[in-house]
Amino acid sequence: MDTTLFLGLLLIALGAFASSSFSIPFVKIKNWNWENYWLVCSLSAFIVCPIIITIITVPQFAAIYKETEFSTIINIFFCGILYTIGSLSFGLMLRYLGVSLGYALGIGLTMSLGTLLPPLVDGRLFQMVGTSVFVNLISGVAISFVGILLSGVAGYRRSKESNQGDSAELNYPKGAVMALIVGLTGSIFSFGLEQGNVLRGVAVRHGANPLFCENLVLVPLLFGTFLVTFIWCLYLGWRLKSNKNFLKKDKYLFSNYFYASLAGVLWYIQFLLFGMGKSKMGEYTFIAWGVLMSLTIVFATFWGMYRKEWKGSSVTSKVMIWTSIILIMIAAVIMSV
Image (cartoon, rainbow, N blue to C red; front, side, top):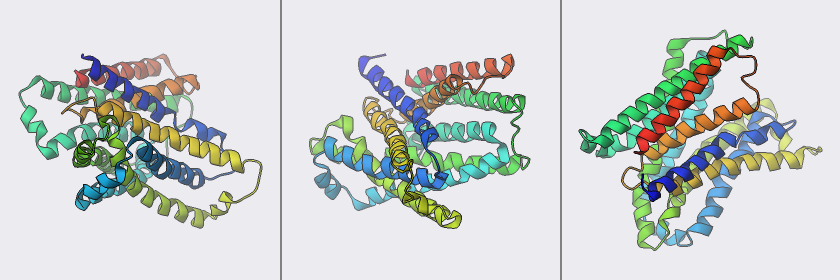
């Protein structure tokens, strides 16, 4: 493995760690509903961070956007909207499949489809048929999906062993449909990033550093994501009468804004580092998505171990979760070779 590719993988791994850590600050938030802190987190992650970082890293941004075809930016924007619609289906998927199995299937499909969809749409996948790259890509996706599914089964066993059984509303056919919707729309985010190739080309012609060109794509993509999130959170706040929490003066008000914003910063850092790492991948940029998703699950599992979420689980369940981590790490290596 050459030095450039290794650096790219290292940056993506750091991004995956940020992704797996972004929800940690939420435990410090008091007296706010989900829709309250998620809206502040989204404002930080989807609007404030992308704009500030883009201005700093790509000073020519205005000229670049002006030269780029409007249809390209709109396509990226709508990918962000579709991605958010998928995230709203996540709750129903968990309701019908249970937390552990639903999460594993949703993330697994998002990773697999997000890795395969971009090269399938632009024709690169067919060009790779018969090559070692094609074999590694398909093998890596398959092994990673097995690992993620195994982690879901381990999580399901853990919930039963700790007397935290899943919802009585389990409905696997409906859950499978919801998981497919989540996987398809979740993978749209990866597709939206790939749609930014034209924008990156314009940026390079303007002398922008290729290391930061992904930031230009994230601005319209995440704006689309924020638009739907903003409407949904305010609607929930109106329905649950929780919008007043934003101005409610108590000792937690400042800290709530701080920790929710910090979570947003951590969430954005994953894609800042992801974009930097992806710029080192050459023509095989689409494998970066699979590596990011796989390593995110690995680091999230380590966080779970650190927080003693697996305390009291059987040896079989622990062996299954560690086996799944090993499989996912092997898959990430295979896809990167």
